[in-house]
Length: 110
Image 1 (cartoon, rainbow, N blue to C red):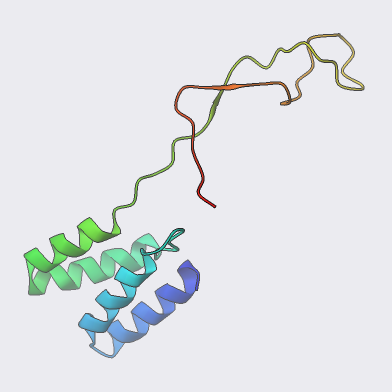
Image 2 (image 1 turned 120 degrees about the vertical axis):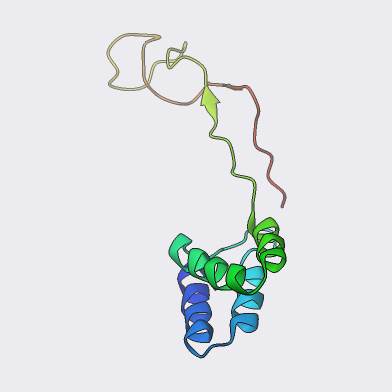
């Protein structure tokens, strides 16, 4: 399921008054290798209702849904030594090949 599907399920359970099941769905939306999550408005609604019941439970849920945000790749100068067709001036093309990232890099798991 994607973010939208999780949101529909969560809101449906909230409308039926089943906060516990809504919390379970939110938790499952943030699990796995590539979590879908729920939209911010839906999460805010669950957190508000849960906080009214138990601030400890709200804090526990909040800690479960916090996911580290990937840092954008940073690139070195757009100038490089290769010429791409149609660029006009050797070494001044704006192509991204032959460029190396600097700073922290993201590693993917397969």
